[in-house]
Length: 201
Ligand SMILES: Nc1ncnc2c1ncn2[C@@H]1O[C@H](COP(=O)(O)OP(=O)(O)OP(=O)(O)O)[C@@H](O)[C@H]1O
Ligand SMILES: O=C(O)c1ccc[n+]([C@@H]2O[C@H](COP(=O)([O-])O)[C@@H](O)[C@H]2O)c1
Image 1 (cartoon, rainbow, N blue to C red):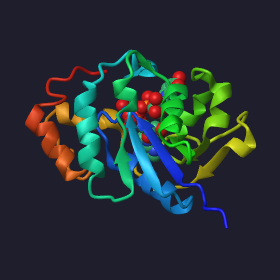
Image 2: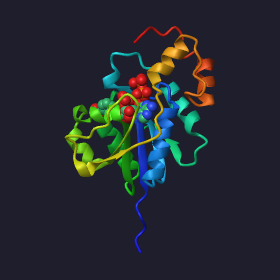
Image 3: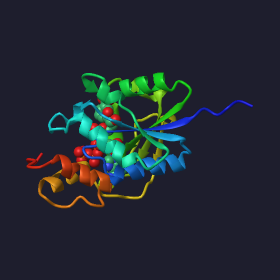
Image 4: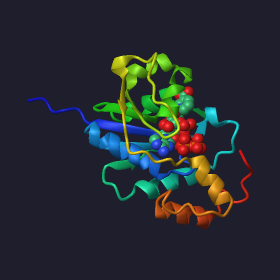
């Protein structure tokens, strides 16, 4: 009998900060697609967010570690923050495949991100590197029109109308972010004074 290849979810994001919407997306994808692990990959320099100020990678990485620490199936990778220059998913998947040649990768994206995927660098190469899991997100229509049908699975997940930009705005305005992000992340934001005095993006 041949051993089954490990099934690894990849949750890429800027995570500025990581919030419960990200965690529910990863948890639901893991349960429904029978994933052995979900690797969270904080971006280094996300090119589609060049119009906004992005918190330094080490803070975003540490918040992601704090948020995922209690889940034995969740891990965090430094591949994107360790690579100099702009972050592209084609490089993320190449690096992860080198680290885990034995595994099948499932890249998890929200409805907003999947809509843009054809504009991503080397988009045509992505379908051979991973299977894509497009999850529902409040305020965004989930459509996979024009994408290869065998390359993408759509998944309805519990709706959490949370965004990192709203969390940043709230923290900047002195409003609570309790229960939008994990408790340890609330404390990390306060400890390091993140998003304080943030201008409107
Ligand atoms: N509430 C949510 N429900 C489902 N998916 C989400 C949710 N929030 C983010 N995602 C998905 O998680 C991935 C990473 O998102 P990202 O780190 O950019 O967070 P964000 O909340 O969209 O940030 P920002 O508000 O700064 O744009 C993307 O694929 C995004 O679509
Ligand atoms: O490869 C690209 O060109 C590309 C463009 C935009 C976003 N991505 C990836 O999509 C994931 C979510 O990105 P974001 O900007 O919504 O946080 C993250 O892993 C990014 O690296 C990738």
